[in-house]
Image (cartoon, rainbow, N blue to C red):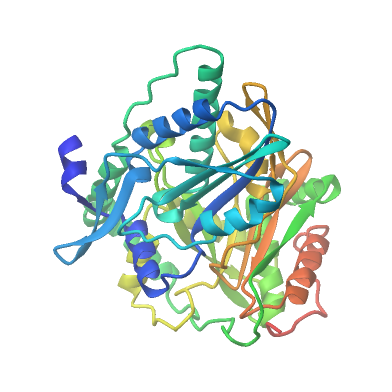
Length: 442
């Protein structure tokens, strides 16, 4: 497998789609994953840099270049990891360096899809800035990176030998196996389901880019214990999950927003089949289109959405880009095919669950980095929006928290704030029609 990595391999379907989007909009930061951590304590920057280098060597996707080979986008793995860049300065320079580190587009054909910077100052806490392009990883991958960075750092500052991280070759194998699966009987059966399930759906965009002119942004969403209990009660009543109820309520919000009686909402799902992929850094998530009928004539629309979500997630392995291609969905400039809104119910494996608040937070989430270092997330300017509206939620304490991201070319900040309030209100009565708010996207 080492030779296969060195000689270049085809991308996965998901990576190929992200590569194409990067070609169309090379200046976009929509598919960046970033975090800024304030590190308080006596930090050993050399130990941190060594731990970071170990991670880069263990995960080939972090050393990748995405190039054209014989007319096909392919992956070329570099021999050296992206270094941890060291800068000196106070907290006042964080936003400027964030713009340089995370707010600058990646040149995927010539640089690694990850950047790391440590800002040091003798009189204030250090700041660690990390940015990963989605083509090389996902939320789960980010958790792996943070966990291994913490473990490697702790080992070094305590005088122990750091764990030897095995080079992960599983992602290259996954990309090849994905294409074989599509051609096999399971791939054919899954395609037949999707072809029938999505027959007759309205693929016209529900939002129009350019209808308003403002910056992209995000608003924090918090559902407290009261809303969480009601969501869980609604899920138990219907023998489904809180994810399905939250998805249905979000779809209802979109129905009120757009005047549609049925929408397709995208929902990202992990496709880490098998134990080896659970510790692999790579783009191992697939967008699953869920049919969401939310009109008053649907009856218990929460149950219908929950059933559609369950059936869709059971077929999550079929790559969304291949689905769009086979369905021949018409492409509209500035619009994602099939759906224009995403609902992400974020979760992590048990070993990394303490890292979830870092991903969901808009600032202020705390984490014990180890080695005498306390970490806290710092709110940074949001990246470009992937969709007109996208909601990401996860469990935090006795409730749920997350963020609603909006594209300022389609939705105003005032409308996004109103959407947040409507969503929290609707979560108190999951399944109940809350009308009187139907309007167009601004």
